[in-house]
Length: 107
Image (cartoon, rainbow, N blue to C red; front, side):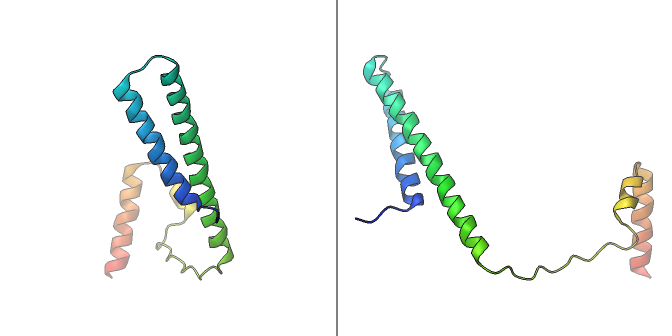
């Protein structure tokens, strides 16, 4: 028998936990059966969470194995660098820089 995929385990346990939760809400039992159902619901939720984490980790590992594609560099704005942005505190100064950039783009 083959081992189930992490996504399959996550979906099945999430559905089972949800059905147990609905059963707990509908029955409103406050005895040993209710406690057992609540503990099973918590256990199934934990298993679903761990399965989701395992699926994400597997996706990250397969993404790391593929060669990275060339990321195009973003064009830098004209006349504005990180130091300039740090120095600008007021809205008036930001507006002046924006107006200056628009003037450079137009002409």
